[in-house]
Image (tube, rainbow, N blue to C red; front, side, top):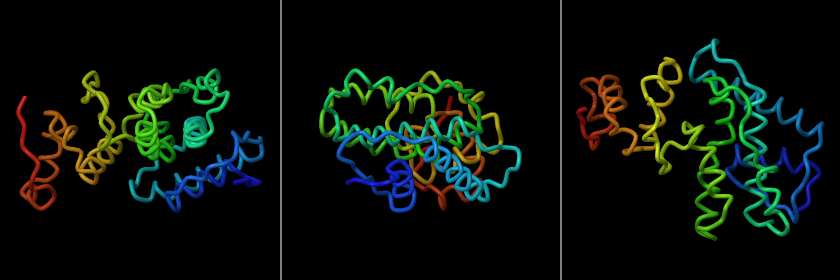
Length: 212
């Protein structure tokens, strides 16, 4: 497809319809389109913030636009790969901002769709170097990968989930995705069981109670 606003079209379709627009080649992002995307993602962040009821967590513009570009270029690289091998690190750069709750939740607006792209890449070519690049991004922003198989053994969960709002959202997504591997980590398991209380079987009957 050829579109006048390929970057915005990709973000909008993914967030509204969970569809990916594939173009005939790698489309550059104009400055105006980037600013429009920043504004659009901020409005989406504010809308989602109504669900977690916190005025302490601010929209992180840097994290949001970085993640949106990662998602956009990843989607395009699924099919358009001619002459791109030398540019992968440039198209999919590492995050250089500060990793905190604001950047995690702002980047999640886009990164939550990344596991689906990785799955598609793995089905097409398990040796694709892009898979490792995207996997490393999700290791850093694993809130967006809940339910996706990642090795998170090195995460200090007590430190990771010290923010009350982020902890609540993280646990809710674990339950929503029925992410057993995460839910059976002793520290997380204890948090979940405490949240469920006597209604554990109502929320998640099949979940085992683990011990240290």
